[in-house]
Image 1 (cartoon, protein in one colour):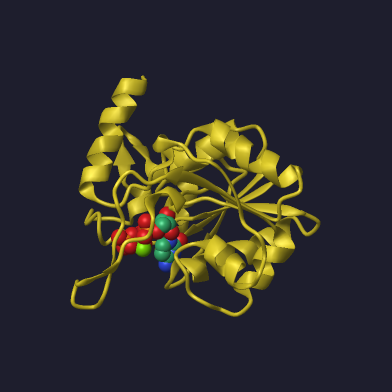
Image 2 (spheres, rainbow, N blue to C red):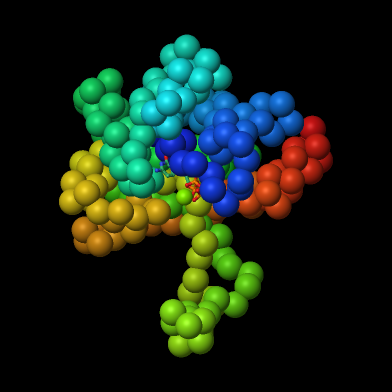
Length: 221
Ligand code: CTP
Ligand code: MG
């Protein structure tokens, strides 16, 4: 199983003095924690990390030698495409691929196994999903509420997301931008299945998230 790790973002909302993937969390970078989780799952045998172009060497130095690091692009979907191209070169016969945000540094290895199991059972696209606890509103550009989707039918989705290589590459072929790979696959007409997500697979986006992750890690130790 091949995993692509988009790690080329700037981390503007976190506001650290380096790219978010290279920010340390209790002494170990988010990127290293994410990659270790993938390798610890026992179901991933090739990891392709997509890093900011000027930090490719820095990222490589953080990681086990068998991990491949390539430069990313402007939008997350550009980075995923760069990772998919490299994965296709390194593992041309691979049937499936995982895409997993570096920013989801505390993702349990077992969740990786759950996504892979759903792929092996025949799904072409799989996302971890959690029920939402807040009521979600749709708003217009002025912030005026335009609707309230029924909460019971809503899910917050996480990564790793799993796909057949064919379906994901076809969905990305239009060079569209999306913050979620499954959204491209949906638009292309394929069925996306869910598996239960995990609270620890939350995305570290803000300084609050990073502080929360540090506290959680202490509790887990
Ligand atoms: N990502 C990427 N290439 C980009 C943008 C994002 O590889 N051009 C990656 C990030 O490194 C992260 C994941 O996609 O691991 C999820 O994106 P997000 O949480 O939005 O991270 P950033 O884009 O870095 O943060 P921000 O949007 O706050 O700048
Ligand atoms: Mg972003």
